[in-house]
Amino acid sequence: MDLRSYRQQYNKGELDRDSLEASPFDQFEKLFTQAKQAGVTEPNAMTLATADQRYGADARIVLLKEVLGEKFIFFTNYLSAKGRQLAACPHASLLFWWPPLETQIRIRGDVRQTDSFESDSYFNVRPHDSRAGAIASHQSQIVENYDQLIARFEELKAMKNEELIRPKHWGGYELAPIEFEFWQGRPNRMHDRFLYQWDGGKWVINRLSP
Ligand SMILES: Cc1cc2nc3c(=O)[nH]c(=O)nc-3n(C[C@H](O)[C@H](O)[C@H](O)COP(=O)(O)O)c2cc1C
Image (tube, rainbow, N blue to C red):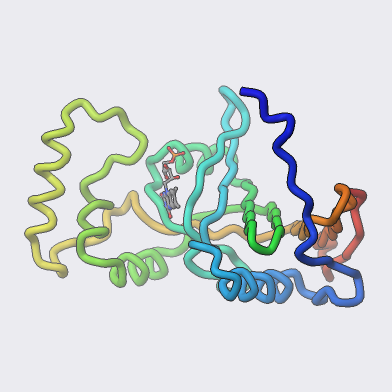
């Protein structure tokens, strides 16, 4: 594959220091609203990067389900690859890329499991069949017998909603940001980048070189 001629000029917006919100959460919310208005499909789809001892970084997409009390919350299986990685190394990076805005947002922080009340309350508003799927799936494990997996899923689907209880190994994680970077594509690769860092008492903002 030769992709050397793939080239895009970025010119949809700009970021300047004076227009930034003092709180990166407010800045995130402002841009999230713009992404929705610009028709981004699933603006809450974010790349979650975790790490393990074996190969270092590992990344996949998950859905942001809530920003609550300055925490970014997503849901998954605690026994999945990401779950095991987060148990060993409870730090992660989140990444959003919204092409219609030419905006990238990077967030780094510490991660921990949400309390069971938060996990239950989200599990219980999921559609019935997604609940069945979450119970049926041993996420990230090798499937020895696919027919058995589907049979189990069908069996769960046929059950009543109230019988589909959240398994203890399925629930939320909350990432508490210590750093945000807002990146806005600009012509000629002279992109605008602003880094917010938590210094223990307030958010400090600096411009980064493109
Ligand atoms: C658009 C999109 C949204 C996804 N949302 C989630 C999610 O919210 N939770 C989740 O566990 N997996 C989600 N996945 C699947 C993950 O990318 C991944 O395949 C799965 O979580 C297993 O990852 P792991 O083996 O690294 O633990 C999503 C995938 C895509 C493409």
